[in-house]
Length: 219
Image (cartoon, rainbow, N blue to C red; front, side, top):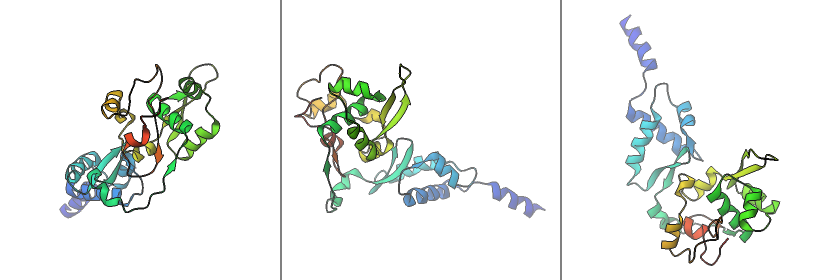
């Protein structure tokens, strides 16, 4: 009877934290995209603490060649930023976006959620459907909630894929005016109500500021 009770207890007892870390590590390593807490919980045995396991793993990976990073509401394993030079032998196809696409993306990133009319007001020119479609095809912007105003216009916002591409946890991590000025990326203040300048390339291993901003352009 005692052995049966122990067996029953073991079925509902969560693995120790070391084993939980191994499980979470395996899930992250095998995933081709960032994983949410909910997805991790769905794969772990009952009673596990994925938040604690992730916190411990992040600390352990801090000085390793691979770091555990948070991307929006998800987690992923990424090559340590200071070792990016080791990947320079990889061939990357770089595609340059049009100035209209660059400016539209920058406005959405800094003013989200923003309607098409608001984008056009900031840019001072109309936004073609092709520009919006291109950015959506890249999965860098998405349609947000409809604005509670006449006509119920849709809004646009940046996606998690945008954050992941540029190594950002959230839109709050985008460079501010002070950072841009100190980096020499802004020679003069932008017009009132405008976003920051931009020159965005679709490529890997580039710094966000050098990809998203060009000191010779202003919106």
